[in-house]
Amino acid sequence: MAEHRHQLTEDEAAAMFEPSGWDERYAGQDKFWSGNPNPQLVAEVAGLTPGSALDVGCGEGGDVIWLARQGWRVTGADFSVNGLARAAWHTEKAGIADRVDWWRVDARSFAAAGRSYDLVTSHYLHAPDGGMVDVTRRLATAVTPGGHLLVVGHAPSEEFTQLAASQRRAMFLAEDLLPGLPEDFEALVVEQRPRKLTRDGTTVNAHDSTLLARRRP
Image (cartoon, rainbow, N blue to C red; front, top):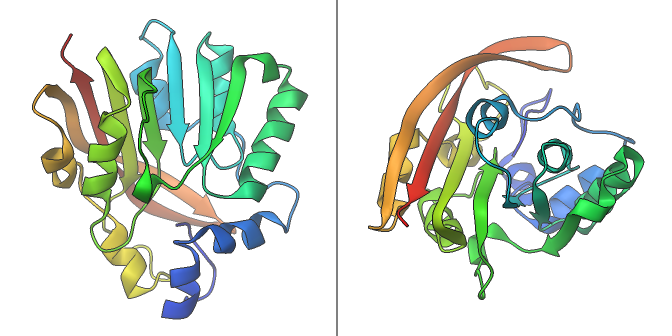
């Protein structure tokens, strides 16, 4: 889910929760996002010892590239074929493709299937109708003992005037996700962090709902 200049209809908003909507979006301009790593990823992961990482909802691969450059072995996951293709192209251009794997998966039906990672992260992935609690629970199953889970999203805000009602309902506070943490996880960061967002020349004040948790060894 992302910002638009015009008021979205519910039909348009529904498409942005599905792979086809993002495939269409990524089929347009050459570069949709800035390519910079998301700020909460840098804030929370810069001090961790690099290992294996899974970025779910990786989009064009900005966070994947940053993690690989920090020494992580990264799997970028997304439900959009076009998004993954763009991300692969960007990693090739960045010269770190040998440190990256790709996985097409929908976070809403994510299953670790025996895979585990030292870091599992997701930024601005918003499942409809409160679905991020279940997504958090699913992502937690892929965290190795002693590893970390970082989930970041948009906090509810009146600033996002162009969003449809269903998109507003998909936003969450960090504490909303706590029921999705298994018992062997310890929450380390549960907060909303202010930052400014600029989209299409418009700057708004927003908050990043930030949940960082560690799985006990």
